[in-house]
Length: 487
Image 1: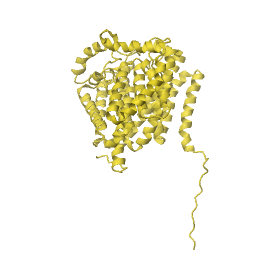
Image 2: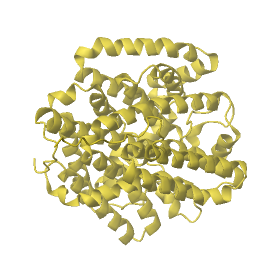
Image 3: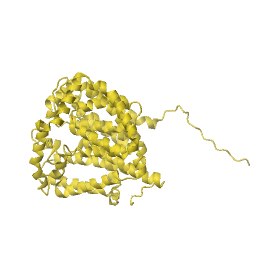
Image 4: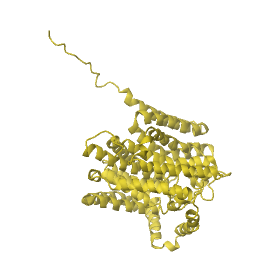
């Protein structure tokens, strides 16, 4: 008998892929809802709708579309402060706006990754994360038992913990490193362009909602709410977070990004300099030198990229007000003794040094930073709401046991990330990710770059660097796609 030939009916090429459309419908629906709420002057409702709606979209993306989830999470960290300002501008200043919970809640979904893979913390590759988690939960207990506000301690735990868990999530999904590399590069190219353009607009003609924020927020470093008087903070809360985010983006542009990276670099460098954050400027230099040292044979290529970027940026920097603002800030490097900001920082560190090093238990989470708003009756920052030293912030809050666990785990991860296989060192994106992590560490003397949005930059790119190491060991060298966690 003749053999029966099986046939398969193929769907037409033009058939709509509903599965691929679902996440974009959700994202576009979220954007439309937020804009509609603002247009309808429904900010009172939007204040609570926004974190709920973003969490709903976030959980869908986390479970079904993990690559889109990464990009969505980053955009939330970058744009949520601007949404908060628009809401406050309509309904009045709220020092404890629920809107700001959105990026924390969406990023916290990576905790499910931690719970699923919790037993793997015993293995060499992941053990350092276990040390860091123990240090943070120790400090959380101290923060509560010392009589502090449970709400403040819990929020501060999110501030410290969420970036760490995000890095763990990236490492556990090392198989998706090529896809993650692509989406992160694309996200940061667009984000540098968007927040860079908005930063220039803010400098020359600050929108009314940004001026309202500058008047009401207890942040003296934002400058004056008038044209040419703003220290650019773009869509972020203040110049510091904006500067470290765009610093990371500008370094990442060195690894590629297509034709769009050139206009992005032009407006990005201009707004970066207009933020007047000297620590981030120095961090950029450290990161650049690290990348060149790691990829010395690509020095000419990187130099060419920098020269082209400089030629694109130069016309923006020669505009009178821009040039004057940048030159005035640059001149402070030559006369730090007369710089009030530098002297205040040094005085604070001398004052806090004995308290940070001679308190074995630590003050616990919730005792410093923006979490102090939640324990203060006025809703304003507490006495240590601004803590001008990341290095001292760690022992001051975590104490000796927490600091040993946290710093020990951090050094472990850094060693693994920086002493990787040859293949990972030939991947310019992986090298740049390590350079960004080093650039963030270089700023610890001035501010704690391990928590909040700065922490997302540090831990996010450290997680990508770690994922790259495992990817090249497992895929390129051995061809083994299994996760040999005991190695």
